[in-house]
Image 1 (cartoon, helix red, strand yellow):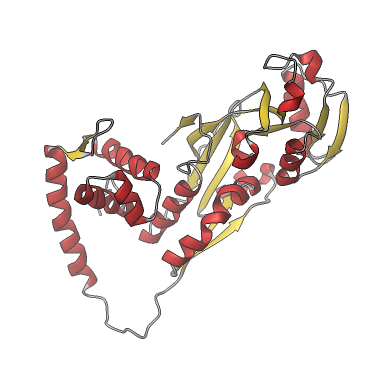
Image 2 (image 1 turned 90 degrees about the horizontal axis):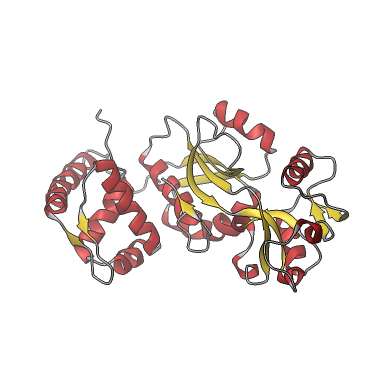
Length: 312
């Protein structure tokens, strides 16, 4: 079988955009964001190595000659696909088989971005079951991926750490010490270390590997907390404490709820965080493309996701 330089989802987006010449109408028709439409077309063009549309600010996208040829060939492709589908045994009473995928997604990312869109995904895809693991300790997750326990994984990792061979970077977000903007009153940002070190700090679960990692990173950046007010492993609890002005913590934009970003700000930048993605080799059922597209749309392509550098 040929290794096709596109996914079925990309073809669906291209077909709609070619017909409507409108990112907005295509997004509405497919139930996705305009950013996702743009990203799908950009990725398709990169994988093909040719431009399909002429896109200029303030103008509707227009098919270029290569795009017109691709559209014509796509029509033949879809006709052949319908012909192949006609071989399916007619049995209206039979329920479609359900395929199950397991996905590893960090708890903060799952709560802020993925969970809120699962109802729509399941409504559109009754034959796909997505099961999530959100609390696997960081030190075990790469081993679990290597052992084939997951079909997909979407995690954040500090940018100063090497990328595991099975993952690829698809975005970058800011990281550092976050706290309520009131802590910055009377000071320029970033806060001087002598001011920052006097603030009340919130740390991960006491004596955990995560706490040791955070403290090592603080020391690397010249930060020496002198006033620790509590420990917790729950990102939503830390975010709420930051929003109430109770303390400061090592955090990232990505797991800070959008409604809190007005009051909770970056007081001291540290290493950025990569958004890393994994898809198991062999997860080649066409419905795996739909699951992958859902994860991208829920997180990376979500307008609320604060990527400072989108990846591929």
